[in-house]
Image 1 (tube, one colour):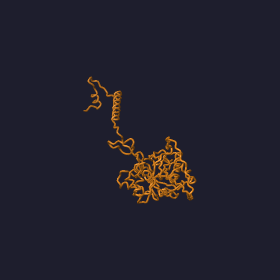
Image 2 (cartoon, helix red, strand yellow):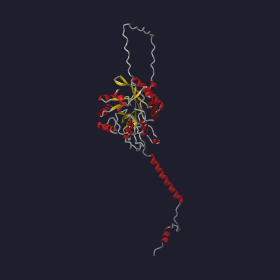
Image 3 (tube, helix red, strand yellow):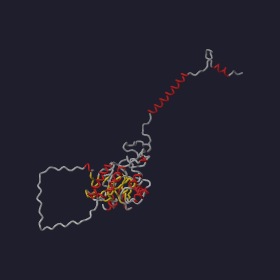
Image 4 (cartoon, one colour):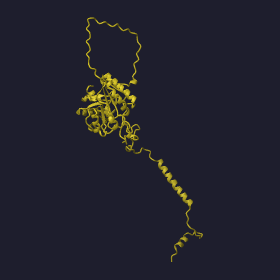
Length: 385
């Protein structure tokens, strides 16, 4: 007959002296074990953190290639949450905006002069001009003026010819993306030359509105900038790529809307200095009977050389109106436009759909003809340049 279970347990729980005891948990011992376990976990996490790999982690643009760390001055381009704009509109406040434009040159291009084989010379801004200091020299007496002989014939009277008003072409490019300011630009007094971005949306309606308002239509094509910190947009014309690939990008841009008479470059300080790429562009423009405006974003541009070699009518800009986004500064640049128009007969100015630019242009356009100037589309200037 088996013993009861509790009796067997009692026998096992007897020590050598024969006394019976019961198993009991020790709270202090349990707390010690728990403390040791927690300390071990903490030490393990600490060692893991100290030995963690410090190499750059993957970002929105993908992991960094082994052995090729990204240069600090060439940041990878990323897809933004807001569209590319010349400046923030009310609808984009608080959202990141893409780096938009290369630094606009401050130089003034004076056309109409043949100098050193070029058809334009670069003049520094008015604030940098200094009158030369005459060198002292010996005093020279002017000779007495000669009296004309009595037998000399009088000079013929000058014919009364109608005075030709100096012409000014105002180009506003970068249009189409910032739709509210584009609409305000279209409502400006014209005729203006409006150049639309090829990757904007709703280009059909916007360009039709521009033509209906009496403005001339041009196309603003993105070209490779010199800096990697700015984003020229999709389907940009790049240097150093196969001709077929470059031609594909060019044709995509040229097909985005219709009714334009020519193109000008958006950015492009690197691309416009590449003769191979610019020659390919000019060949395509020649096939389509299009004109070319060189925005002259770089002093190394070969736009004129490429255009002349292929036979494409072209012109260069004289003044960037808003390299300083300030109304007073823009008004001073408009004075420079007037000065050049009086001096040469024609002046080309480029501006952008920015708040300060629009506010400066509205009163200036209303009074420009009363001051003796004629506002013309850019194509008129190209044909008579």
